[in-house]
Image (cartoon, rainbow, N blue to C red; front, side, top):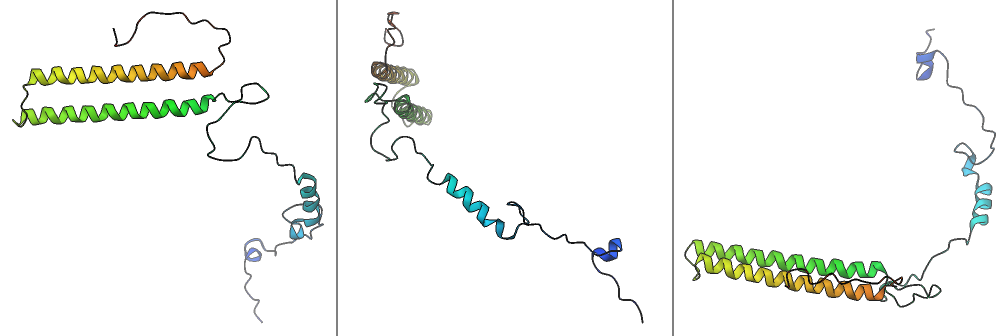
Length: 168
């Protein structure tokens, strides 16, 4: 009788694979069921230790300071940062819209559909931009003073540096 052809590892290496018996020690991938008794003991030791910091209520006002530190009621930098970012976004959007309107007016004038001549239009546009930038600068300064008023001063005296900006 002919010998049956070998399959798998036996055909490659001339011997069948050897499977070692598991000793069942510890929590390893080879232990049956993932060693549930050991895992349960570890879970019981660490159960109930999760601590949360701060209250987890969402959407209830701005972030405030710490009562124990004596800064309760003082808005934190993060709440103020959101306000600064919001104002910056509004200013940039307004600037983009104004620029777009000016470009449209120049195009209309170039095609003969606007009543102003070029010099008048440029002068008016320049005035509108200066007015908008001055207002933005004033709003940012007011916001900065309001935010600085909320923070502890650390006894730092401010010095006047005179008038600055576009409002001269």
